[in-house]
Image (tube, rainbow, N blue to C red; front, side, top):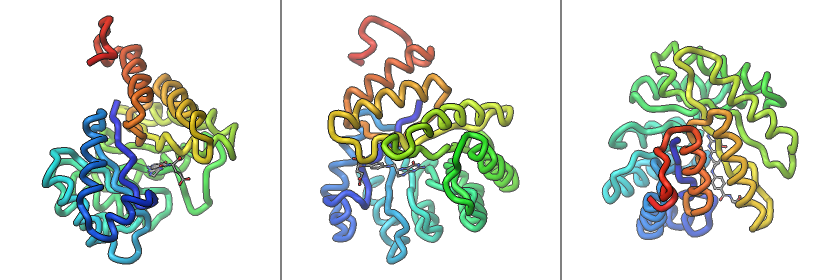
Length: 260
Ligand code: THG
């Protein structure tokens, strides 16, 4: 199970300001905290970054990788910013993300082929947000076809069903479980699966949101989920993940598995 730390985000007031000021301090501090807590990758979310996106992404990638040896998940819809980050990235990056939207799909998949990166395929199209598992699978199939065109192997393609907040789309969680199961049936070897976990608890109050994230993660892991963009600083979430990994026979059981 792959953990991608979500906390370096332009929407965060403190880190958004640090990005704008090119102040490495708060960003490196958050990067190190997430790695210490067990993140395998760090998501760098700069949003659409219409102004100065390439410079910002290049600065973030080099700043973090000059101090910490960890691969990154470059989270932007700006293809120029994506390539600027990939050009300086050490190791195998995640492109976050392609979608069913034709221009974004073409550009991002071309970058995945060129840089041998992993890529997230988000189930979102020009038709909008998919309503159920079938609509998600339809978008996923288009993304898989494009991946094949650019020689991106299924082991590097992470299909994301697009998680919606339970507060606004309660029935949708069931469609997300079904999507994960269906994605795994689409090809052999199967594509990988990923979610943005905390989307589910968006706008939920503190004390509730952590439980939504933890229980949702364990249910998704029962469906075969391979990776999550999530908050590794929630120690209980990380224990949930570890326990589910034992039950999936991926981590060896011992009476002290939660301590190591
Ligand atoms: N799929 C993919 N990428 C993604 C997402 C996804 N990237 C962005 C997002 N979704 C995942 N990352 C975050 C990062 C931070 C927070 C949530 C998701 C976060 N949320 C606060 C909360 O929930 O309380 C604040 C939210 C708010 O501003 O209201 O910090 O789905 N591929």
